[in-house]
Image (cartoon, rainbow, N blue to C red; front, side, top):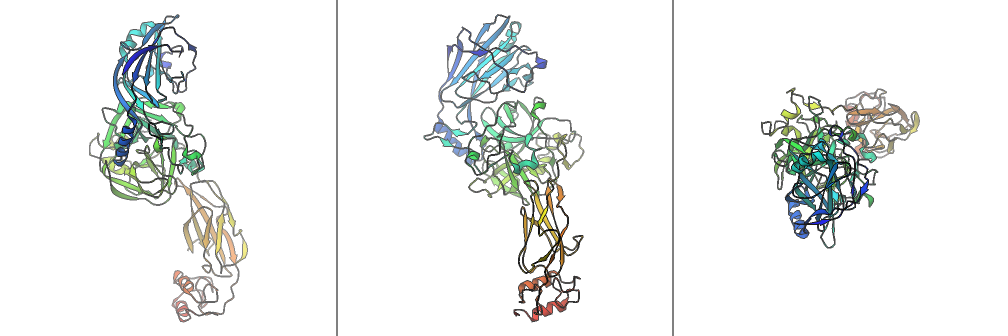
Length: 622
């Protein structure tokens, strides 16, 4: 580290009283060119190849994604930086930090600033990437860690009333300079020849894509974390039974938050691409356009549960800005594996993405290298994957409630169905039996015993959109039952699941078919239905525990007469085969329309006599 003096053009913005200082956007800049030189602190280049080699080992050990190297410093305003007096009785203080070949920079500070102080963090071009800092950012921890700015140079500029200069001089110091060797937007490894591309895979799905629409109310709760200016993970805001809006944030224990470093946690909000990049496209595998401007800095550790858990809960030290439109998710601590679910996360630290599991999950303990044996939920994605940087993100069950946080796994775009494992929320509820090792004390402060909790102050989700049966047309006749019949319907919302019911009864009782179906169609094999019979069918779309029936519900169609002189020919194909036997067995013991559904003796019942006729004539053709 070295020090020198340079000139610098910087913005001048009138200071704001502390009570009014919290801001949500970027400040306007009015550039001036002070004549005094600027104090510069310089850091030499990192050994990037060595860091990349370490990162390979970190990945093997399932350690969280690292983007920067922290360097502890002691740069107090009393000994570093340049102070100048302004014409209106205020003063300004400036310090430049340079790090050779760095791709980004962020800092940790000792932070006790007076009421009139307003601090700007600028890149080498004088651009601001997040709001100014004020006395509203003072915390009990007396620390403040900044978001990242791009490039190898950071300019810190503060202006205040001259009377407040002694307090600022005593209360502000740069305690850590965190030198980035991976580019935040693209997570491109620098210093390698050629540079190693570690962008998130193109199979990932942006949270603004139609597939994620049913979970629009949950997406804003998920944030990307930066711990100690170095380590990237994901996590989510979570509700408590007091429903008082306390900003609790849940993530994975292996992401490294402790009592000693929780104050260095920076959480980025609403960092996502503005458009849906087609999954699998080149655009989906390239850096997006998400903004880093919305963030919270500083937290307090509430509990951490190590294996068989991997769950940590912190409380964010500052209020959540209303303009961010954030959400606190509900949870479910019942010991029941989800029947389906979704993951929302920041793969490779990039813009927020969405993954979906359409099938039932299982509970499975798994030995995750570098972490230990974790009581997990095993997930195999039908859409999307997770990556480094996704650790700590929530798995939401079929009711959109947190049931686990991502601990580890092997899903990649090249192996999308390889399993991921989420540390179970229910096991962390009682955790290690103390307030420091379990969720219960914090998320159920009134000891209500609640098993589930909904999202904080959230509007109920909308049911799936209406949709129509299309084929066979309602009331169709002469439908050929000897060949496959394709039941077709229009689409409801993306991400819904469908269930098809078909019966010979208008109230859909005693269904012949009651089964899940892919989007838009279900095939009834030829011979399953009898000739000259009216059948009734309907489809139900379900998402987030809410359902919508098709229009109409039910529809109907009538099959054509099937000529047959073959005793035992239940399906009318002029041969007595295994299909005829299956039809009789499936309907055995039931009363049916005469001559249909296995009633080969035409007495209106499927009995032993029908079975004997099929068996006696089995294998014959007519």
